[in-house]
Every structure is written in C-alpha cells, then in structure tokens.
Length: 347
Picture 1 (cartoon, rainbow, N blue to C red):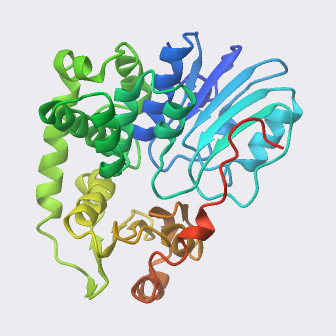
Picture 2: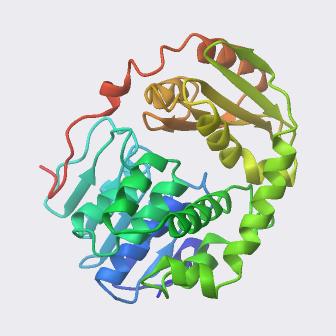
C-alpha cells in the first residue's frame, strides 16, 4: 500500500503520496485514511525527529498529498512549493503553527488543543469508522484519557484496551532513534504490516513484531528508570541520559512514563548526542497540559501544548534550559496553543 522510495531521493512518481511522522499517531492516522480510501500511494515517513518530510515529496500538478502529524510550521516552505506546483494537499495535524496558509488546493484540519492528536482528528473526519486505530494512536501519543473514552465508545473490554495501549506505546517507542540501526523496524517497513488490518487487535494477535517491540521497550524503560534526576524541584524533574542506543530509543517513552506516574509534575528528558549537543523531550504536567511548545520554541524546538522537543540544544545552554523549565508556569499558555480548528478548506 505504500513505500518510502520518494523519501530516499529516488525518481519515484505517483499520483498520491502519504506523508507522516513515523510514530504511532502519524502511522495510525494514515492507516485510518487508507482503510477509508484504498489507493496505491507512495509513503514518505521517517523516525520521530525527521520532521521536514514534505521537501522529499516529488509531487506535481494534479497529484494528491495526504499529510498527517507533521508540523506545518516546519514544513511551510515545502507546503507552499507543492501548492504552487498545482498539488492538492489534505493536512491533518495538532502541532503549534502561527498561521495556516490560505490556498484553494489546501484542505487543512488543524487543532492544537492538548486533548487531541492527529489520529483523533482523522477519526472525527471519518465519523469513527476505524476508531480502534484512533485508540492506538491516542495511546501512543500519551493521551490515555482520550484513548479510554474512544475505546469505551466502541465497547472495548479492559483486556482489549490494554493490548491496544501496548501496541500504541510500542509503535511510538519504535520511532525514536538517530537512524534505522537504533530501532527494531523502520517505520516505513512497519506501516504496510499495520495497514493489512482493519482491526488492530488482529495485528497484535497475528504479527509477532508487536510483542518484539514491546519487549525491547520494557527492557530500555527498566534501564531508564534506574537513572536519577539531573535536577528536581517541586514542579518537576529533568533527566540527562548518556548517548547510547537504548537512550536514543527510550527517551520519548521514558518522558511519557514519568508524566503518567506523576500527573501534577512536568518532566524533561535530555540525552547527549555524538556531536556534543543535546536532544530533549518535554512533557507538561498531565494535570496542567500547557506550555511545552512555548518552552521548546525558546530553545529552537517545537511541539504542542502538552509535549515538545528540541533536536539540537547546545550543551552550554543546558543550564539555561533547566532554569527556564523550572520557572515555567505550566498550563497558563495552553490557550495560546489552542486556536479554533481550521477543519475544511483553508481560507
């Protein structure tokens, strides 16, 4: 149903391109759409921090591009270039963006509230036709309350919910790493396995890769949980991990686990990189889900109200980041990240 030939710089041409983040939210959003509208499409995806993906899409006049769970802010120039070439773009996302371009060929579904993710936006657009996959995406994006509500609406039993939570968290964990050698399976190879199934419970039952990823995730989490905070205060904690395959894989899952374990507190997990910079994952308190994207943008990062990241924080700015983290008024900026949805054609 898809591949990543376009993402490798080849000359692949197709009338349709599916572009998404390689985490649970991005992949599950595209799975829902292609179950709704089956079609051959070139998949362009990557690891969690490969965000500038639209520039890899060789679409031309009359082609269609579906974009899911990619920051429009980070892809704005490439989006405008596609629109200028006569490409029709359907865009679902929940990351902070200053302004959505106005163009007759752009259909934008952007909502920035802390209680939504891209899989939920696609689910709404499709009227809940493949809601179990939205549940997986929401669990993977650490929106457990949202996932539980969606699961209840389709009558999933506790054991079924637990399996879908495991799957969502495993897919999300699998997207973290510096390159394909860090992860169990590249997102571009995982997607066609997911897309075979209308029911994600059948995927868990029939595809061993789900349990394989979950086992690796649990082992990495156990190692991370033995770490002590680099800084800790009443409002939260900051962890600094070494540069290693396990830390590259687990940074996002570790941040999510800390957030769930301590809902009133904020958390940041940083890790060193080979070039001496730091990668940082930030989680606002679940009880006050706002301020993460604002904090990350101050240091060259991005994100959404409840979660954000920084790809290349200079080590000499780490203490400044920790100070900013410690003094952030979590939740107070949530409304700034939550303008009205732009569902439908952008105007």
